[in-house]
Amino acid sequence: MVVLSCILAISQGYFKFGGGDAATFAKAVAVEQHRPVAALVYDNRPIKPFQLPRFGAQDFPRDLNERTGWRPVMGSAIGLSRGCWTHDVYYPYVTKKSTFGLTKDSPDDLIFKSSLTVSSAPKTYFELGDLQKAPWPKPLKVHWFYQKMAVVLDAHDAFPATMLEAISKAVGGKFVETDKEFRIDFDAKEFRARTMATLAQSFPFDPERDSPANDPNSDPMAGVARCERTVILETIRALSDADLDRLFVKKGISRVIPAPKDSPLSMAVQAKLAAYEDMVHSKVSVAGNLIETYRAVLKKIDGDIPPRIYFSSPLVASVALGMKGGGTILL
Image (cartoon, rainbow, N blue to C red; front, side, top):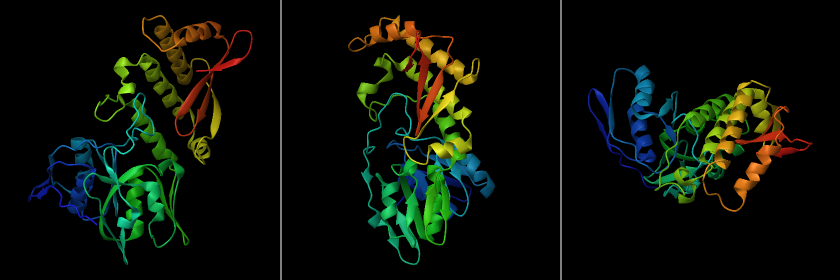
């Protein structure tokens, strides 16, 4: 087990971070706050150096978020995230490279005695589903939505439940302990909050991280994709927490959601259709006969039939539109 010697300087009045990746950052926060830390890994880009004045423990979450964009969820353990999802959960144009240029750690690297000691080395991460294989005092079950998420950990002589609490906070799940097992369950409220934050963002294309084939600057459907993001956002707004809980029992469960006339969801659908209209009347180049296909489809849509949304987990929202003369098409 490689233990990270982090780039950290502590002065009387400041917490100073000298820069580094997510593992380095988690280590620094754990040393500063004297408790276990887990951080969600978004990519392999370094976190810039910064310093925070030590005004008081209650100021740390706010100051860290304002200075870095990272949102610590405090308690006996700390979970760090940016308050949004990683690129593989939803990204409008870009396919995340599967390993971020990082190395996946084995759950064998977790050292269990009467307590847990772990310190993620630089440029490594744990995949959350793999941690189900670690020798926890009780079996660990992780909800399917979080199993592919990447985390880094730092703890010294921590209770296993405390470490799992930190992990749950980092990935946006709900930690549950029973007499027989540990669980990281789906948390509908946090899912909603992070999804809203994710869809409200503008994601810059990064040629070092992202697939060149999905560069929005050369993607003729980029305008449609932006409007599709709004359709998903308004669909999430239209769903209750109980609806989300049912949809996320397993991957791929779907539900039909009406989009009443003049509702925010209906207006988002109309904006998406307008984006398709703009595309077919532009001079963009799309492979094959797609432009002609879209043009023909748009002419057949019956605007008097209210649209519906076919939503399936994790974040897929297809628009069902009635056609003149009968039938339905999904866009």
